[in-house]
Amino acid sequence: MKKNITFIIVLFAIGLSALLGIMLGKYSSRFLTVESANASCSVTMAEIIASAQGDVYNMAEISDDYVEPKTYYLVIYSVDGETIIKPTFETVPNDLKDEQENAALQNTAWEVFTTLIPAQDRQMVVQYNVFTDGYSNTLAAVDQNHANPAQWILEIDLADLEDKDAFLFTLIHEYAHLLTLNSTQAIPDQELLDDPMNLALLRSKAAACPNYFTGNSCSYADSYMHVFYTRFWKDINADWEKIDVLQYGTEDFIPYYEGLYSFYKSHQDQFVDDYATTHPAEDIAESFTYFVFSPKPLGNSIKEQKIAFFYEYPELIQLRENILSGACALNK
Ligand SMILES: [Zn+2]
Image 1: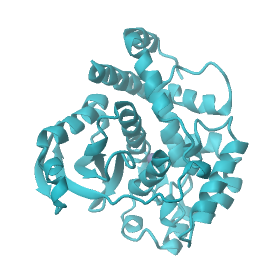
Image 2: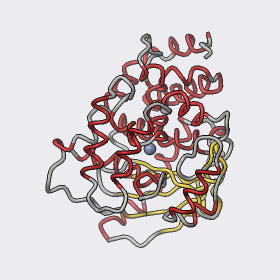
Image 3: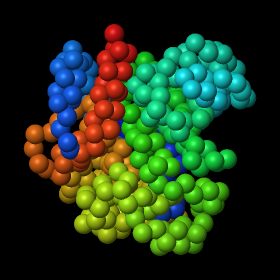
């Protein structure tokens, strides 16, 4: 139940405008090697995927008395290569002082990220925010740096490290946003970042973008996002947009969530899970996470094609290999 809300809130946190009311293979032989090298981790991979099961938009599973927890930022770090430096401490209630002062745990959480993602693949991360909204709810998030939209911030909830599988799944999902929205993939847009609720500005930016417009940036023609969108979303986008608009100008998101859930139910062969129907950017992030933690799909359904999509990029096969090695190392 909580988890439903969790994923929804993660979307808020990533700063993709979807919920903010704006419009938002090659089969390498090396892969076989890593699959066998990581054979002992195959159970772990299955458990990580299993941790993400469950329909987030199935309103029947959400309790009526659910109250959204408050989020507190505890410490803000600058990132200097492998290390985190210059902590600044936010004002927090007394009962969070222990977590705020737990530099060891904050470092451990950071090291999970650096163990999973190789240094050359996380150059865009310049800041690390430690926050908490209590156990579950939001596990991690990414956001653009408002001072420089080519740079990104990683945010981790210190209360969620123990739920290892769900934490790893979420970290890779969040990383997938960095992978698909960073400045080599889409043109950072300071104007939109400064004025995200300006619909006229947004529409003019979208109209001027010759490729897929992510909601806050124009993607390059050869970007993962544009190719993914062109292949998998062109035919369903018009129907999806009719649901997407339900979130604008209202406080009541239930019709929007129900719309997405029914969209998922009628397109189950196309999405790895119902959260992927949120937005093309969420779909590519979820599909990437399944690509990392699942065996290569054997079938040819559209959702399997979405997972297989990433095998067309040798650099992503390599990245998957590195992430799995990191996950195995963390598991020891
Ligand atoms: Zn996301």
